[in-house]
Length: 167
Image (cartoon, rainbow, N blue to C red; front, side, top):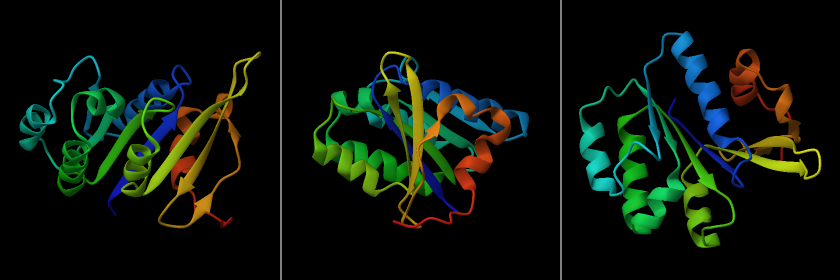
């Protein structure tokens, strides 16, 4: 089953840490992982497409962050890049920074993903962070969960649990 997940939240909330937990868990379980960091990739998606063209389709892809790519490429180029990833790979994770893109861009990206993981600051003073999962394929929104309760051991079950609550 093809899965693509968008991790969405404000700067500094823990999107990269969440991606690192996923990466570490997958590597530990013997999965191939391609982690594309904003520091590692070229700014034009055509160059990134070329680099990924020969990669194994069984690898799991993590792109942190789409926000940097969006600032350097058109929406059409970004959507074509995401389409390429979805056609080539079985599992992709993207991050997107909240508050810097137009609602139209955010809506387009959310519409082509199977799940959205929202991360937010619950309490600015204590810097408590929470997340919830929106499953677009199952029409489901989870309760807000304290991010500090998530570990490598329960991460997969959190993302892939059978959902009982419906919108």
